Length: 368
Ligand SMILES: [Zn+2]
Ligand SMILES: [Zn+2]
Image 1 (tube, rainbow, N blue to C red):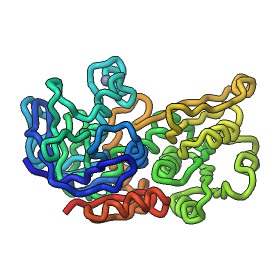
Image 2 (image 1 turned 90 degrees about the vertical axis):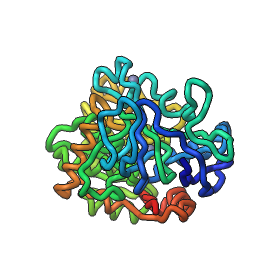
Image 3 (image 1 turned 60 degrees about the vertical axis):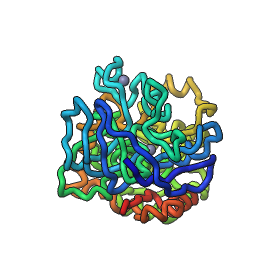
Image 4 (image 1 turned 120 degrees about the vertical axis):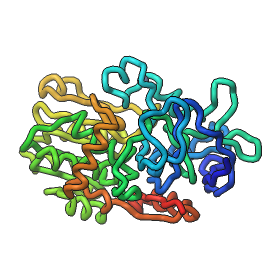
């Protein structure tokens, strides 16, 4: 079938909306008409990769309506409303133990461009293969082919444009707190970086019952939004030493921290800001070559924990966790709409620009 897709033809190039050919859903595939899709920083990181085979089709916070299902699909049926998340194999030890965020086959499932075993491709532009099925989706398009494990059925009365970012960014921030850190009620929490992921972590820490909620950022408007979302203390990282300020507020160091910037120096600050027995989750993506320094003596003597977290986090399955997050949203505890700015599909390059310069916290593109 013919679909509309916002293709990238070069590293860091602008996206161009083109008509492309999409294969019919194969066994286990689900064809979803996209209603809205979030734009996530990982889209921009991979768009900046000079090594990809172009053209490429990104987007991995899609939400829409099932149009057709391939052989063997029983999870959803045409007409069902779905959010979409990354793919996982369902067969490796991590998937089998309820940890699909750490699927052993994550890379091949999500980053191999969507080639079939016979070398053909599901997405083609003028007869040329498109690097697609990115992170289980490629949702910068009118339609997505997703596997069963990437779709999460939601009630048809829910707003798909508001909930689309639950598929990656919101899930990642909230998962780092609710599933990976699991903070104690009444504890102190600090988030470094008040972007989409960081603010989701902050809202989740409030839900978890943390009572001292500190947000660190350099942008005043983001700190203001953090306050609106429940931060009890704001620290402007451009003004002085954030670690000293956190130690003062928490009387010795925070119980829990999330780093959502992806900068090694900030990760080091997040570790240094912990108090006795504190735990930090490193969530921001710093790149495969990055390294972070910490003092093992401090870790030993203070019983500190440093963890990584991605997607739904530890011991969590997106089908359950996203349903849990929708429950919080319905109760007004996870007001993701405050983070969003909406764009028309043909204005997708403005969404990219605003995400790059930080003027939009979480751009969401609405499909026509
Ligand atoms: Zn797996
Ligand atoms: Zn993402």
